[in-house]
Length: 150
Image (cartoon, rainbow, N blue to C red; front, side):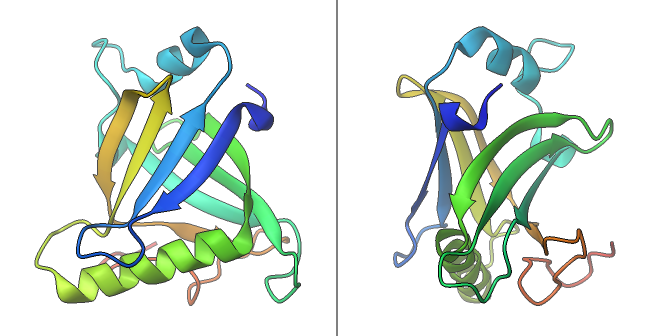
C-alpha cells in the first residue's frame, strides 16, 4: 500500500483524555482490512502491534520528517506506513508522556485507523519508538514506559 493513501492527524494533545493518533486511509480498503485482521477475522489486538517513527532527516532540521509505521510484533511485517512531520509526532509523544504522568490508566495513547469514517482499528497503546535516520533508537524521544525492556 502506498504511503500517500494515509494521513496522520494527531488529536487530543491538550485535553484530559488520551492523545490520539488518527490515521485515515483513502485507498482500496480490502488490503488494509486484511493486514489489520488476524486469523480469527478479528482486528489484531494491541499486544500484537508496534508503532514507531523513523526519521528521514535529522530531528533538529526545521522541516524534519519521517515515516510512521505500524508493524506486526510477532512477524515484523509492516501493517501500514505513512509519511509524517516530525514536529507533529514529537508533540504527540510529549502529550502522551504527560497523559501518562497524570493518569492511572495503563495506556498512554490511542491509535485509530479509519476508512470512510469507519473504525478499522481503535487501540490503547503504551510504546511509541523513535529511530534516527541511521536506524538507531532515540530513547529520549521515544515513549517507553518504565519497566519495559527493549
